[in-house]
Length: 123
Image (cartoon, rainbow, N blue to C red; front, side, top):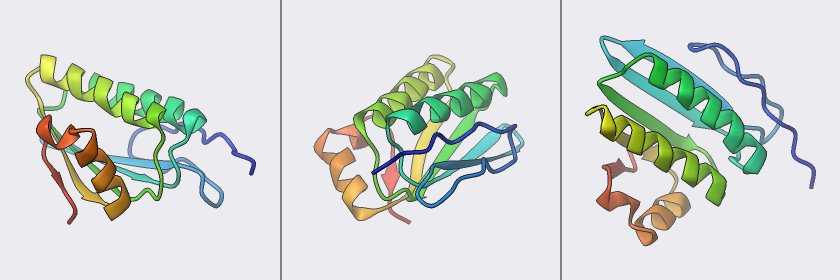
């Protein structure tokens, strides 16, 4: 299996992916940012996710909602990037939640107790 690195694009655009490559789309409205991620989040894609999340932090959001419904798999690197992002938002007193997640990833996040840190809902 060969992984192709997704390229980061400016906020509000979709990074071009092929097949299972990760794509990130962000939108902002009144201090709230919605991040929609799709594709596999492997080690290389996790670095691109980190770049996108850093751009979101520059927007100084008060609330961030992440949708992972179109993510079939996520590695430990991707989970780590989400945790670092959550901690930075927490320092800034901004809220974070995941709305929309596949069952297998939801079970994984529950097993490692991420649901104790921030709200995670499947819908």
